[in-house]
Image (cartoon, rainbow, N blue to C red; front, side, top):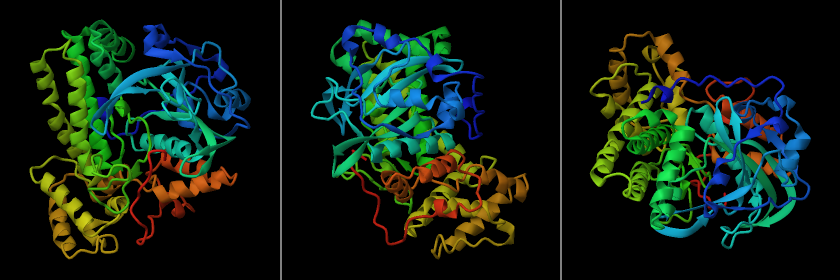
Length: 500
């Protein structure tokens, strides 16, 4: 894995002393692209907008302090009634393959890129979801509901806490709108942050339109603004595609290692920077099921957990095809061939760390695979099983029967003990390292639902508590055991809609 994609926690960005939301500086590069790359649209004001929570992590990404953020100004932005100086709201145009079928009629249908902020850590898009209808809404109402907004807000915090590349949200707000989905729900807005919102689908659109000059322009935009080191390489465009392949492979490795199912891996939901983008009917694994498909519209299981590595490769192939006017087919194939070994290597690093294996040895892959087979056969809880390994002295006897009631567990533990005997570090050091990568607190669907129901009843306290735990998920907190609970054994498998 790349040096910046290790398991060690990132150093948090320091807030800028005295910085204010209104003092953000914007350099809106996207608004200087050809006119049909976007449509300028003013946000639709939302009645009775009330802030529910502000993310300290996302605020720091902007060089701000969540504790001193001007709530009135932020509420004005979240309501669609106010723009910060320098903002220039627009809806981006793109296309993409949805469940394997090309759809030319895509774009920002309920969100607006308000502006591109300049920060000491690099550019940050401010994107308001639930901002109203755009020319790309198709038959949508341009609204966001509280349920899906809270799920996306928490997902960004959870993924960042697990060191998985992701978009974040600065804040989430509820309003007095009543929005029809499966039922009538409270309206909401979400202010999403991302280094860039450029998607695979942007390149597909230009390729399908046979706009080679604009395709090249977009690639150089990504290089110049987000990957400037690639400009110094012998073939910058090839280097960019390699960068996308590598980062996507490492992203998928992290999803697989932490039991995350995106559930809508359409090409328009794939980030050119390798970020987790567009949270819908996602789920973190509870009882381990390699075929988990939490999206009830995915009747074929195209985006099931065990299909994600292959789907990402398919999406990268589609992206590669879009780049054929600029990069030779054989070179694209060579780059694409690095995907699987990169993913496998990254996944092995992550899984060895989760099992407390510091060195790399030949039989590790079989040990890891058999551990997962045990969990699946016993319908064991994915996260609790890993955490149990992190909290018991293996030499003093390990009791995992409560988590994995399988007769083969003893044989696996004997092999695990033998493998650990070949490690150089001591037991205490190993367990401490394992607890740094095996979370106590996970964004489980039933816990998110509790937060949603409380917020719909006017109580944002559980939201703030869960957000704080998810942003630092590895340290057990006193009095917080309820937030580490798995769902009841009788609970049905997670199954959500695309509006979730």
